[in-house]
Length: 150
Image (cartoon, rainbow, N blue to C red; front, side, top):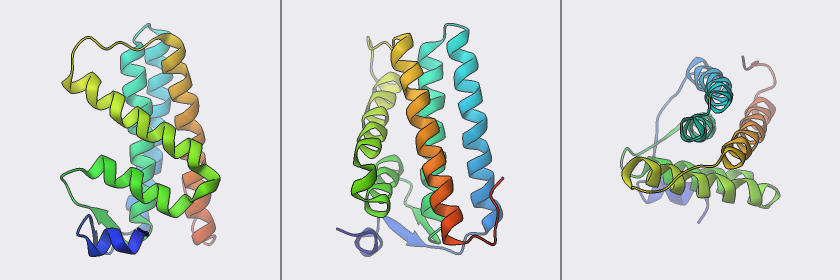
């Protein structure tokens, strides 16, 4: 299934989205990365992990928005992961798999019980999120080099 099939299936809807909104999402993602690092340094690994995941989600949403699409509300996190996989392709397969794994863990951290996050796992989540945000920013910038993010 390509990204147009996500539209046809109703998982994404077409919507004109301004560049400023995309830029705000990238800025927020970068701020979440800073917050994640602060939380980890203060021994809140779970909080740091969640902020790292949220940074990835925000960057993923910016990617979706850059195509003038918006994910439906129900299942939007998974839709963003699927869209990123379709757009970024095989070169970023490992990164997308990490994004999806973090999505599942974050879901369990919020809705489940008994799961913890180690310091190294939280630190790795931040590294993964930084790489993902950078790749998304580069991709969006390459689509329209006349517009500068951040």
